Each structure stands twice: as structure tokens, then as C-alpha cells.
Amino acid sequence: MPVERLCLLRDDDVYSAEVDCRHPPRGWTQVRPMQVFGLVMVRRGLFLARADGVEQVLDPLSVYVERPGGEHQFAHPCGGDSYTEIVLSEPRLVELLAGDPTVPQGLVFTTPRMTVRQRMLAARARGRADAFELTELTLELASEILSALVPERVVAGIPVRVSARRRLVDSARAALAADLGSSLDDLARTVGCSPHHLSRIFREVTGEGLARYRIRLKVVRALDRISQGDTGLASLAAELGFADQAHMTNTMRRSIGLTPGALRALLAAEAAEAAEAAEAAGGRCPRR
Image (cartoon, rainbow, N blue to C red):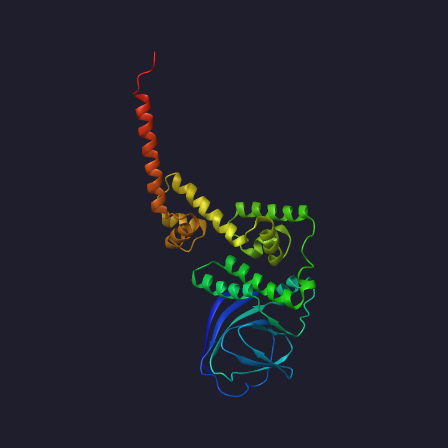
């Protein structure tokens, strides 16, 4: 069966990919054991899944939960289809499920927000988002799916006290200020919690995700350096962790509506206007 797989994110604990199955054979695939935990979100089409003899219909409004140790088969009665696949390591799954890796069998029905996040993950991967942002997006999506399956366990690990949440977020902000190049895992280890809980609490306290906050910090630093006269944009982009100069330019345009060149021109115009005003003020005759 021709299968095209576009890897969105791959590390030791989190994997996500967009998968297209074209011209699949009729009938059921061979029985195969599942060795990892996975979430399958249909993007287009319809297919059937059989887990330990129980058959389920999967369409774009459902998520199939693959549990380690089970035996699975698939069938594609309507021809080709496509889906998003998320695979989590056991340690990362334990973090999301408040210490208990046991995953109940079930089919999760999506919400509109899950569907948007599914597309956003693929779009940001194609838009050259870094691993920090893609990890956060993937964990947010996985957490929302698991929340629909076992809500009481997903929320169990979140600090309750407002002061505890604020301290955690302040620690994360301080760590980001010290090193914008830290990964989400590194940042979580620094503040002493799981990446998912850090991301979730950070959004609750600040109103935006860690990845977005980190990008805005990069843009502010770029603004400061350019306003100080830094003209080496390629080296500045590399220093701040952008993929290249074009990536920095596009990020600044989206964030503040100005490219580095436009910002330099604006600052130069403001400086010239201020100089002219000062010169005019200095040439006036004092009143008697």
C-alpha cells in the first residue's frame, strides 16, 4: 500500500507525522501487536480499526487510541485516506496522566478546537517552527484528547494555588531570559515539572503559550539590537535561534508588522526628525 509519511516532530519522547494512504488494498490488514502508545486523528476519508476483536469506525471527527500490547487490524473500505499520528513514550504518557500509564480503550470524538490544533500543528511544521513550539503544540493536542478520555487524571497534576502557579511561571520566565535556546524539556527540568504541565500553567497565567512567549522575546531582542545599529542580520538571526535571516524577517513581520529593513528606515527617519527639531530649537533667538 503506497504510504506517504511527513514527519512533523521526532525526539525520544514525542513523535508526530502526517500520513497519507493512497490506493490501499481491500480487506483487513494482517493482525499486528502494538508496541507503543499512539493517537490517530483522521484528516480525510474513513477507515476501520479492529483492536482485540472490537471493530470501530474512524472518520474525521474521531480519534483512535492505540494501546501498547493490543492487537490491531485496519481496513479502508472507502479507498484512500489520511491522518495525523502522535506517538508518546511511556514517561511522557505518565506525565500527562498524573502518574498512571494505563490508558482505557475508547474512541475519542473531536471538538472543533482539536481539529484546528491538528491542522495548526502541520501548518507550523511546514512553516519552519522549531522543535520547542512543535513539542508544545503536540503535547497540547495529545492532552486535550486524553482529557476527553480520562479528564480526572489529566488535570490531577496541576498545582491548585495561584501563588504556586505564579512562582512556576516566574521561574520559567527567568530561565528563558537566561537562555532562549533551551528546549521545552530542558525548561521543564529547570523549574521541576513536566513539559505539559509547565506549558498548561504558563498559558493559564500569562494568557499565551510558552512557544509564543519565547518568539516574542526573540523579536524584542532583535528590535533592541537593530535599534542599537546592528546591521549583521544573518549573524543576529543565528544568535537568536532563528532558522536563518529570512525566518527572522518573516517572524518580525508577523509579530510587529515591520521587517528589519522597514524598522531601520523608521528609526532613521525618527532620528533625522529629532535632529532637525533640535537644530531648529537651537537656532531660535531667546525671548527678552
